[in-house]
Length: 139
Image (cartoon, rainbow, N blue to C red; front, side, top):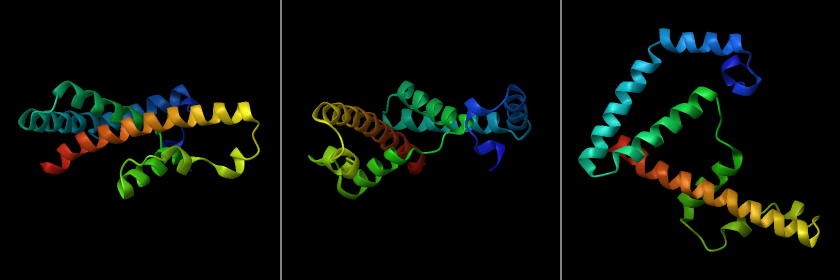
């Protein structure tokens, strides 16, 4: 496993500094600046809120720098949404049924609430990605 693929919280300060230096040498920030400018120009042309587009892009870059990989839950939600759109039984489809069957009534309630919150965050992220990734693909 490369050092770039480890998560930020397990990297030492020295490793973080080395990676930051590499990003500067390789023109990472210059590329980011150019991509941001292009996305904001497209947002302006299409009447999309530039501020929201900028925040979305900043979040995307932050995840990239932190080395965060797509989490498995989000990928499942994204796959479901792309295949079938928003469905009324999304929580049921995302439930880990073998695990759910081992829980007490109260634990099932907490699990379902937690799953609902995760789903809503994933749905919001998916909607943002669709809105702003669409800008990038239109250009």
